[in-house]
Image (tube, rainbow, N blue to C red):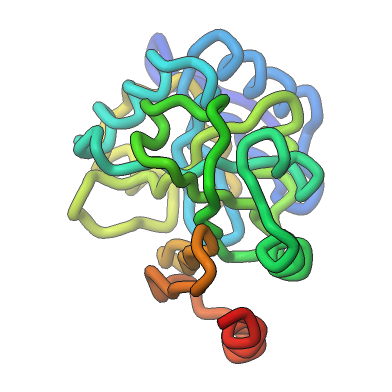
Length: 220
């Protein structure tokens, strides 16, 4: 059953099926982000904190919730690879990699376009995610959103909303709760912004890692 409840006076919690998301509730979540709100949502790896990347105040609130240094960039979640051209510059090789491996449990660092605010990433680069998870992609159907693990900086990453809210607090406008993800490992991060691809972080265990590494080695 899909239903919504209120947590206290401010925060909504939507219980939802990961396989069969309620489109009306997805639409409400998008409206909340469009108005500058913050959501907690599931991905193919961990729960993330989402805000409209074009709303600087909302992005700053993500940093406050996580107690994260503003010099450390946030990654961006987009709906599909067709949306990449909006936020990043790609060459032929990087385009081939992302087209092959996304959607999936990977973050690819690319050279960002000026439309991406320095509040999201103060450098010339931006991390891009397209999760293999329908809810997450639907949430980015109107505009790109932030994607960062829903935990306090330097604290453990948790796998269910109840534990997450105990750690980070309830200064969030909406939670999409699909239950315990049972993983609690973030995405694997690969830097494609230069001619030599670099593995930045080993994250979520994927059976495809060996094959991905072979593809990256061909670019060197």
